[in-house]
Image (cartoon, rainbow, N blue to C red; front, top):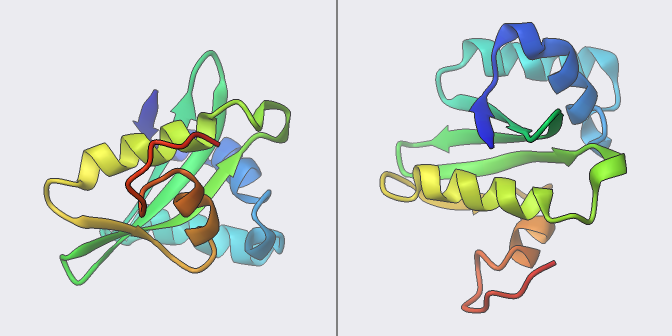
Amino acid sequence: MLTRYKKNLEKIAMGLLSFMPEEKDVKKLQQTIKEYETNPDWHLYLWKEEDVLGAIGVRIEDEINAVIQHISVNPSHRNLGIGKKMVNAVTKLYEEKYSVCADEMTEGFYNKCGKNTDSDEQI
């Protein structure tokens, strides 16, 4: 289930985001979390089943696009469709108001989820 990030889940969120190559540096990671906490156009969500297993971040651009800029799944829970579930949930959440797309870092995974194609191909 997709839930909005809250400050009390900061360490879990930072741990998940640290699996992304561009978020390896601690200072960069702290800056990213701070941006999610303070910028009204940045929205971070966590995927929770029994535990928090993934994180997905969205940036609103020009009141037109909802850009998926972070997608991360706990390595021990990868290849189970959690990333695709997060992309689908975020798309459903934003699609009525925004055009949902991905940035250059998440575009490859986003495309594998079938968002830019007519197929329902699963990863």
